[in-house]
Length: 183
Image (cartoon, rainbow, N blue to C red; front, side, top):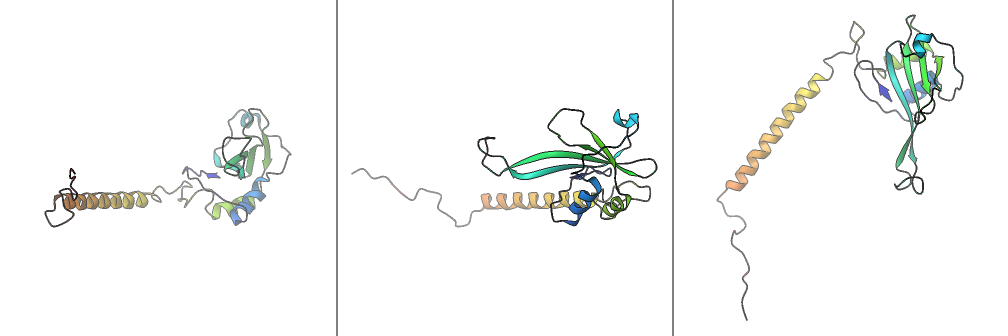
């Protein structure tokens, strides 16, 4: 599942998890109905995407269908996108067959209560600011601490390698330990 919320963050949820059950209730992937939407939405001028959900099944494929061993492939069967209309109603745009280039797009309203549960649970984007956008400082400390750790490890390892190469202490003999003798 790709949870955008302006962050571009990707999250995986699996069967048996609470967020998976909530997504299932919100998006209703087994539903085949569609509702009428404004023509602008059909032409691509719809509200901003809150989240894109790719429904995948793991452990499929294998010989003779693919060139890989059985059970290692993933089937991407469906894509749902969540929008919030101007009146605050969540809508879902579903493509039931992602791998088929067709115009079979289905629209339906989603439950606002379930949408709110997913938003409170941070599935549709981490920590929102008062303005509604994602907090830009959420990920800065990871980058700074990762950069610092990389610099410390890199310079420390470089110093250890230089010390080991420059040492004049006893260690393994530098001359060959065996001689070839002509008999």
